[in-house]
Length: 355
Ligand code: NAD
Image 1 (cartoon, rainbow, N blue to C red):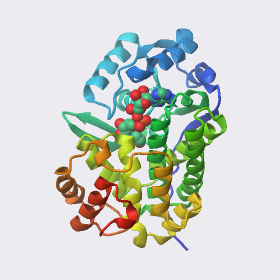
Image 2 (tube, helix red, strand yellow):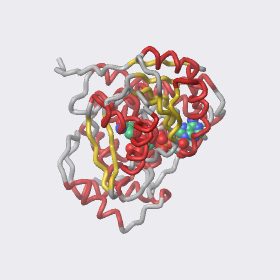
Image 3 (cartoon, rainbow, N blue to C red):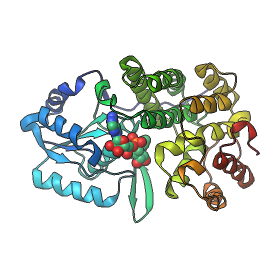
Image 4 (cartoon, rainbow, N blue to C red):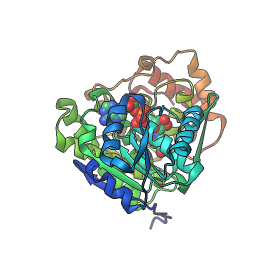
């Protein structure tokens, strides 16, 4: 017997193709009348399309969302919420737009419909990371969990192959760490194993043909499952390392894509059951080398150097990653983490990692 604790998260999920046309009905269902539609500047066109579909139920579009939810963007969006009399938010986009919707929900408790167009998974979590003055503060609160997630596979067809791959591997990382979380539970583990397999094959098919709607659908479903895992259980070494590297200016999803095989290799001996499940999902003989082979076959970035990290920062990153204790299957040692970062910096592959 493996004892466990499981806290279900409340959320309504609407999944399909062309589902954006159901947005107005979802708003009405929540008892709302005036939505502020949020996006990054790059996705203003999609946000305007959503706003048009809402007609009189749209209060306007705020298209200044940015990575890591900067305080200045939240303050500007809050002014629009008040000035326009918005009674809910609709965020259209990836983790940046959804993060802004969560930041407003934290401050106002207004309902939030998330319309995700990447695979980052923020829509399914009660987690919000905000930055102010270069410092990122992360918190958990049910107030930031979106009331409705509306997935429209059609909106993901424009996600370029490069972003599709790094965002998809970012999602896989949530599922992998869920399998060896100290608070792992059977629901999260079942979703995780299914999602790793689905994303592995869907990403391969999308790289071949970005307009393959069946693969896009599998990838988006897989991303929901991975996001659900992230919301249900605590993350470990991989997410800690990516958080540290993000603080040094490295991009979010590509950093996850590079680091995952190395974090998995570090934990392999301490989490054999999770490794068996990852390998089985990928149809590989070994979890870490299977993940590395997948990333390579997808054309993902394979080294931290390729993401612009400086070799001088390896020691500093290792110091930051061991500064505070956190749950992880394998013991965290500075020497081990330094070896891991060194291998990831050069892209040597997890088989060559020293720890
Ligand atoms: P993102 O939201 O910044 O999107 C990346 C780029 O892709 C943006 O320019 C965006 O406009 C564009 N884009 C998104 N969807 C597109 C589409 N379908 N077609 C064309 N372009 C599209 O990046 P992300 O990786 O989705 O999210 C990263 C952010 O989310 C980070 O700030 C991260 O910390 C946060 N995040 C939070 C959680 C959480 O649970 N709180 C989980 C995952 C990520």
